[in-house]
Amino acid sequence: MNELDVLNNIASNLTERKSSAALSNYEVLCNNISFTHGLLERGIAYIEIIITKIKNTLSNNNLLNRDYQKNNTLNAFTLLIPSLLLNDLEVIKKLSIYTEPDDRKGINIDNLQKLHRDFIDYNNLATATRQLIDSLVSDAYQIQRLDPKEFNYHVLLSLNSFEKYATKSIRQGLFNEEIEESLEEFRKLSFREWKNSSITKCENITFANKVDYLFSELQKNSPDDILFTDEIKNLFKFTSEFTHIGYISTFFTSQAGSQPIFGSEKGPYLPSTENFSELKYQILETCINFIYQVYLPSIKVCIDTTVLDSNNYIIQTDLNNLIKLFEKGIKTRNNDYYFFVCSSLIDSTQSITLPCLCGYENSWISPHKDSDLFCTGCGSSYNIIGMEGDPGYIFTSNGPIKVIGSSVPDIQDLSYAEQQKLMDEYTKLSSQNK
Ligand SMILES: [Zn+2]
Image (cartoon, rainbow, N blue to C red):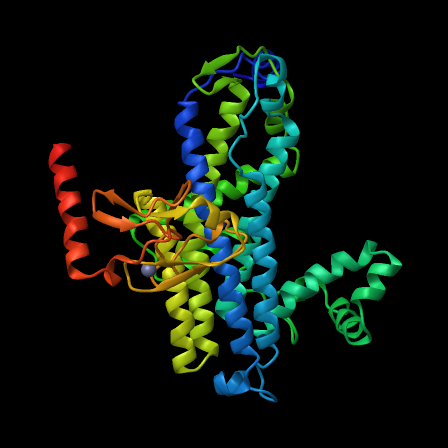
């Protein structure tokens, strides 16, 4: 093959889109996305709680390891860590916005174009993903190392670029004299000195280097872990290709080609909707895997280094629960833990007590959002079934239970005879159903 053969192949194959094909089952994909996106939302709500705890703990001098206490060498990190974590939270929230399940309510043949996914959609999804994976890797690296020179490099590099085009008002809001001085100091360094000078250092420059570092520090070196490092690096390359408007990614997403209309019980959809959903689902899974396998364990390392015994233990427990929440969700699609609640109570401003199997009582506060349906005692997640009226007790496969918010007494408050009566009804009913 010579250069003209290759050029001709490109010209004949990569200038006109083949008509799109749908490869997976769209209904199944939609359900999977809906579940996984819900899991991410619950994770975000829990991360917010944990960051608040970390921030409060790090601002209390008595709870810190010596080096991190006031007037000691590494005290600055007690301010920097929460700030990094809050940045990460924003980036995770952004991904959540771009990975919502398709809204197919009211879609018909006439407005089907609403479901068409093109260049802008792909580009937003890929860019949000790249930002997440890039920020979380880089921040996990920083909070694991807690090395002043490494941190300076990270910030000064960013500041150096940012400052060049920043407007007057941005500068005024951000730059004080000390920062200007530090930047001046940095600019005295030659490019080669940046990664190793008296004020800066970077031992793992590239994204891939940092990923390898994180996995090795967390002692993740099983064959599955090695595959997962590749997945992370590949996701980074793939999404960078979109962000940098690479030829193939732009071509694939901008030329519609001919699109047949598909149909399912829930209405019509397009191959581009389905193709996009497939990518969305894969990205959601990889990112959640990354968050619970690498990012959260890196926060654990950081807290272990900075915070003293008992408070360290409290935050570690929360982080472990959150890791469990994600892990269980991804592995088992654990979706079968239900609470039955009066719809009127869900619509009200009252907070609803949800007693978990682990014994922990979670308070579900108004507005009653699905993203808050998880247990901070053990990391389980729940579903709610709203019931109209005042149904009292209902019978489930696990026995009689009280619909939360009903006017009847709790089962354990009934007299022995009344409890017996309820059990008899239940036994009668379940034997009829056999
Ligand atoms: Zn629990």
